[in-house]
Image 1 (tube, rainbow, N blue to C red):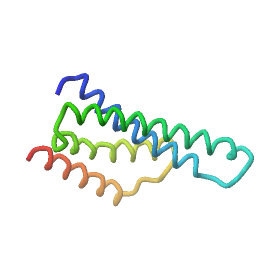
Image 2: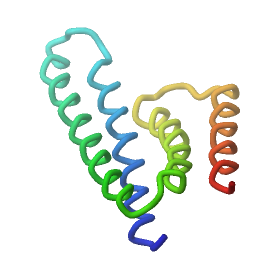
Image 3: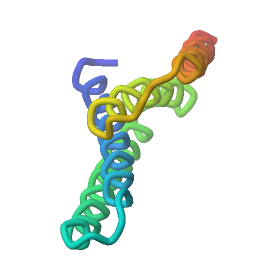
Image 4: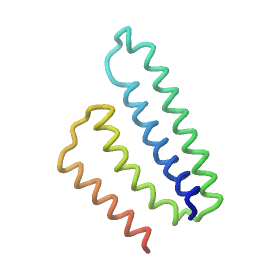
Length: 113
């Protein structure tokens, strides 16, 4: 895998996580006047981010085997935990970190096989 393909893979993971963060942010809060215009904007941004991730992923699938690419999906859990903590101010517990570490360890084991 070249650096360019690796960066595309990072782009896929980052866009997928950004989409989830946009969706959560758009769905948060009640129907306050400030939220009414943010909801469609957040959903649109989330759909756009996930659309980018989808099409770049399809391009990567054309070039690489799924069994080679799929273990990288484990990294989006790490990115998502940091993003949720930073942008959504969610509290990260020890149990959550333990779960993320187990998922990442499993992804590494799968990628090595």
